[in-house]
Length: 159
Length: 103
Image (tube, rainbow over all chains, first blue to last red; front, side):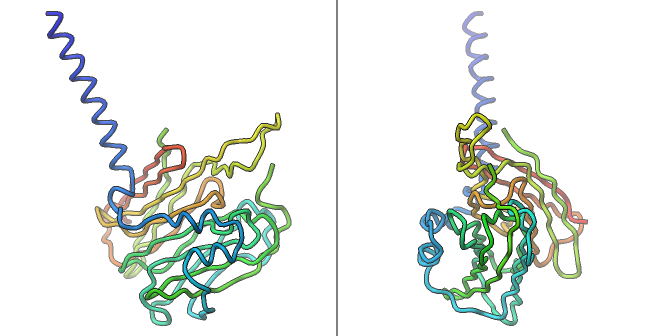
């Protein structure tokens, strides 16, 4: 009787543990899309040049990249940005990155774009102080960019 | 510590527009609390958007993405009623997930 109760308890706990592990695994994007790695070196870079070098090369300015940022951001902690690339002007875009020149780590975000997804990203980033923001796009192994200056009245690093 | 995601997916012509709002402090690790102690870095590092089982976009994030991050993406196709899912993981092992159907 004792043994039965004991083994039953274990199996129930085992089930619970598996359920937790499985749901955690299902929630991990890496499991489903493991091929693309996080650009760790670029995220660790503390200067713009260094971050760009880690991403690949010096990007060329491309007019096909539409990069929208506010001219003046009252709150640097929440600066809305939008990056849009017309596939007619610049086809085969596979990556889009956002860099903020004067941030402690300039690379803010990097997006992998599979075929079929529009090159359209909207998000909000922190901007430590007035500086230039860069949208860097990778297409056919080449880097292209567009930049915008955003004036910040209140810095984004707070505290 | 799974976070909920507010998510909306809307069909606009040939593309589906996804807008997601995640609840997350996105701490840089460079701030101090009122007692002067550093607040540990806590931010979303990976985020992914799925249309059904198909990945539509994957984002790698640093701490410079604003607190309570907003993400808008667009993908081709998608029918009303299809499932769109957004998942994230953070640097402390936390995860978040949100799901909706295309309107």
